[in-house]
Length: 62
Image (cartoon, rainbow, N blue to C red; front, side, top):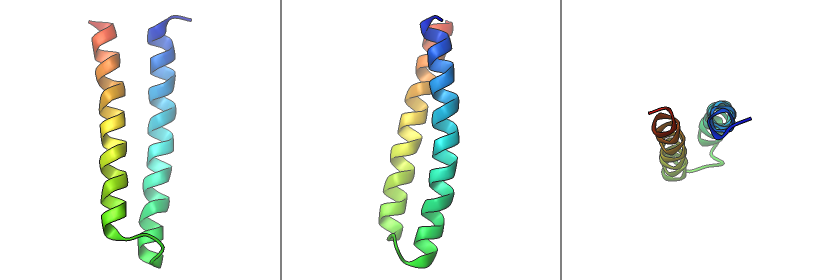
């Protein structure tokens, strides 16, 4: 298993976890367990991590 395959697997797993995390976080905001600022901060972190993984995939493929 090469580095590209590992990165593809990690990206797919991270994408799945990110979607579930965003859904649960949105519900937490609705219930008042999380502030809108904390939700936006989580979204920003998740987007940056996913962009980094996708850039790594693109760099390894090129």
